Image 1 (cartoon, helix red, strand yellow):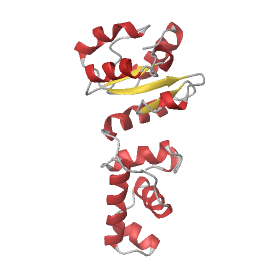
Image 2 (spheres, one colour):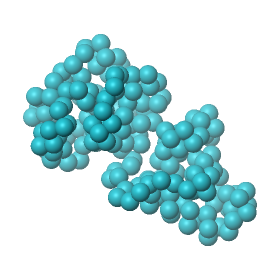
Image 3 (cartoon, helix red, strand yellow):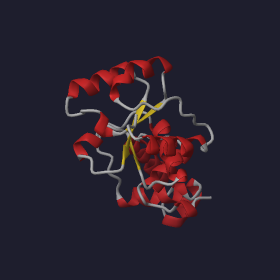
Image 4 (cartoon, rainbow, N blue to C red):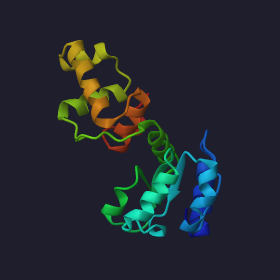
Length: 186
């Protein structure tokens, strides 16, 4: 959902080049949710200025009509952080095709957001980085002088706090949170 054709078409071209994704429609305003709903999209990328999210009832109606759809905000100007918290991902105008692909994959892998605080401890961040680099539990245990059971516990905590179960999902999380550079991933 994007009112400016140049931005919408540019994003469409970038997404069309990402394997496994297809843009099914470009909507110029928020009045076409009825048209979108029957196609059951996995992801809707929305310019937040199209929706008056501050009117909670409008947003709740959209989310209720599309319960299995993930919403990402397309941001290229200042957006109130209160508005952005209603989206599970944010795609910025400066994002590369690769970064958009990572964000879309993460959006589909994450599923429901965890209910408790998801702040990671320093040790959990170290373990997350090691997992993202492809190290095994045994290698992580040796590197940080921990038992394998402790590493497994840290990994369970990572899954609980982030809501992400797969190694690839944790890797995407680490990249998006600037814990690791994409070039460091094998």
